[in-house]
Image (cartoon, rainbow, N blue to C red; front, side, top):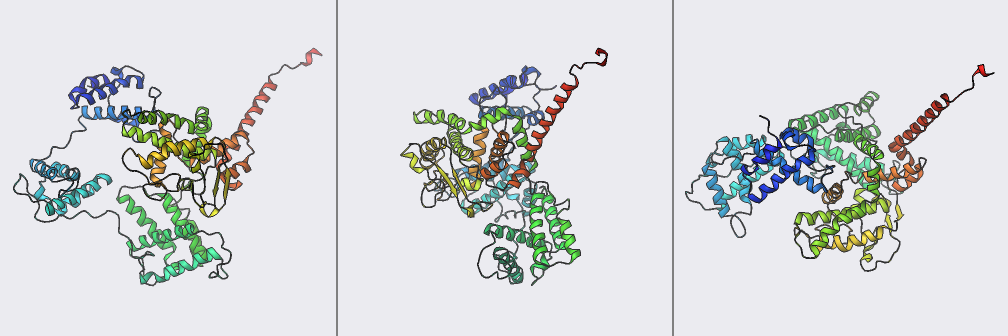
Length: 604
């Protein structure tokens, strides 16, 4: 008999929840009637259907019956867990008596000033669960079983399993135990080796004498690219080839050497032209694809295309290959295994997103008011906390993320749509500060804010010098006084940032970590119902300019700080759409003319 949500709501008290949490789960199940817009008895409580309909992880959109993404997230979590329990999917592994006794001993000896670190029982518990399911007692753990079991686990559980093995070894080493209902192995257990291969000895840092010629050739080629071919040792006028490009080329060479080393194709004393050949590149590509497939990972065509393109270019320009070898190298860049449509143009996903944005006028209006919307969502939570009322740490943290996202979007849309790295590393005070604004804390009078970035810090090497809109200053002042100060002095989870010259601080004196910075932007916008990544702010900026003036290619290029040809390449579909609309209008006019009244010959 098929289970429905109505049946599930009645079953909740029998699923092992505490009284309070059980009431919350039952309420979430009953809310499903509003979510599905039908009666509970007509909604099937099927886990596969529920997951297919409502998804996992981050939330881009949610039903209109929820006010916030957080409400939807709680409903989805509670209902999914209830369905799993009702169908018996979430039955915890029953630990054997010996493992239970071992974990009890661990709990007694873990924590501050004790032999084992806090939460040791959790990582050892992972090993206990896997071993109990296989009928293995603690003293029966062997190297062969550990290796086989770890290989069968997904990435994250495997890491926990390995830490659990290390935990068992610490018990052997530090905890004196007598006969306490369990037995341990006679000696330390081997920790499973990492699945990925170790670093090759042919990297630049390894200083392998066998690789001397390769890296000498590499240095020569990079000097030519930076300072010209006639006299590369004299630093006259650099060609614009930046250090970041040198680093990228080095990464591609090291990728090739790592793959060739794994298949034993490196010979002592070989030079770079002998390493970058068509045969070697094919061998490296095949090894890369096979290695990733063995681990259950996709081949990652973008990485292959980038590395192959760099290496082929280096070989064609500096190694003087034969005409036949050169033709094979050029052809390799277009091979199906490494070719990707996203290189050199806007990715398909991003182009589809901006086209969808073009059709959604409500979303366009939301984006224009995005900084204020984010502020309005954060302010009530911050005010409640300031009044001494109870606020969950997670909700307070979300309010701070909303505040950071408000500052991020305000700079992107009201100063300059700079790239994520430049935005993350903006300094607000001190010598060379890119956005002087810290004095807004003490002086809120209206004044000009200017965003200045030197070309050396920008991807295309062009300077940025923009005067911000007047409505940026109030938002930054609110961010500095209400958000940044809390991150430094009163972080909800005690991870206080350090005060530095950076507008977006971190726990060190550096700028905010990239992962934290991007998460604040992403989750802040999702919380107000907008699914947008940081780089898409540049696409939105170009779209707004070209939607007002279809011929504003030069204006869009100036604001994005890129050349006009790149704007036309990425946003030419807007021009085609306008032309199509104009063409359709002419067809409608022709249809109207064709159906007009005409005087017939008979009237004459």
